[in-house]
Length: 119
Image (cartoon, rainbow, N blue to C red; front, side):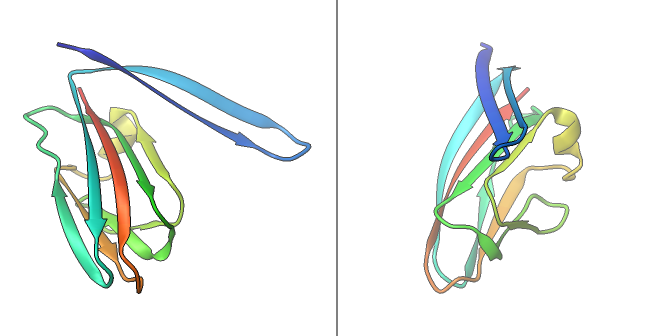
């Protein structure tokens, strides 16, 4: 059964322009994960795609910075801000996403909220 997943974002410059969007994605499935990564360690998250393609990845963290990284399989990406990657075309730039590996090199534990929609 299909599900409609709505996601949105915006960027605003104080006293300047604003760009905002809302998008409705018809997905065949979705998953939400909560990943706790202790200090100075890595942890892998298997996405369990069930033969479907990833069409949306959203990653939110309790903190951000150059000592936090996620590797979707094509090489590590610094998590210095919340991450939204939408559309199968954009997600395909990451390589074949089946597992997300989180690397926390901070002196404190970090928790990541991950939302993945599949088509």
